[in-house]
Length: 228
Image (cartoon, rainbow, N blue to C red):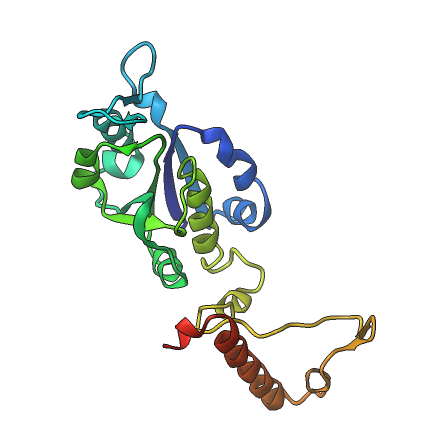
């Protein structure tokens, strides 16, 4: 059964190139992934297709309307079928997305990603429908679309069959709480820099030990917080 992802956005065209390249495209072609992009503006009822309004109490910026967002969400297939699915809002106020989240979400049957814009979304929609809030870092984007692509890519590559070599995903940084070790390929000599001899030895136990040590050393140097 394919992992089904629903994306709510005001800019569906932003996803066209992303979904037609690399492992995401292969996953879609193999029916391992199903990504449905919904234009929030299609749910607007007035002739101007209004999706936002000025905030109550004043202040700069515009706020996305709760009724339009709700109508868009409830028009998606899982909600029309009455299924209870996770609804994730991409926001700088959310908890930081991690490899653990990617692993967890790759095991779901389906979920919804909501891309905010402008000042944000009406708090009533958030309270009524949103089950999870995700941030990809302590910075602000012009909208949730790039963050949604990050989440989709991180999750999709963990679905069995999407990557050509599933084990390469299992050995990635953060999967075991550490950063990945250094990797080498041909040529053996690159401008005087040689490949470590142990990697050419054929002794898999020694190679595994070397990689584990390098992984630990790199984590200690670059991300000591992970060792805590």
